[in-house]
Length: 190
Image (cartoon, rainbow, N blue to C red; front, side, top):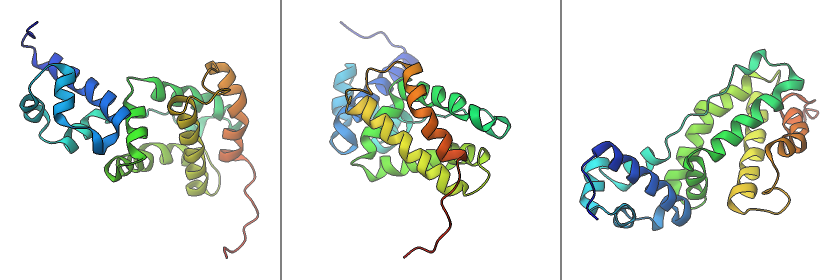
């Protein structure tokens, strides 16, 4: 069956196929030819729309994490404000999961993940803390990435099947502790 000529729809189909390929095959093993075959177009069209594999990857994993102004949220309400936003990002269109999977083996993807964290996530977390914003943001980011990996990539029993309310109830205290709990006693590093 011949594809109708609709550049926007074709571009969207290529991006959707790229997210799936990057998510399942990783950055290094994904090819423009494979993505083109998934969509049913010539690989030259993928190149024409996106230029290179790196440019296609950047477009496929481009997303924004919209956090409310956390500085106005009471400490006891932070987990309830943050966790649904993370779950929405994790479950939206596969963009984040493609980036997460690819970041495990690709320096390009890992740098993209660090950029998202540094420009969007860490500043939002820092606004909710009273001390040690860099450490608290980094630890919470590591916890949330580990949770996303366990829940959506590894599909770890006990986590993967939790509904959103259960997940929030279990991880809420950890999120609150990392952002607003007492900091460990400052001591010099060895």
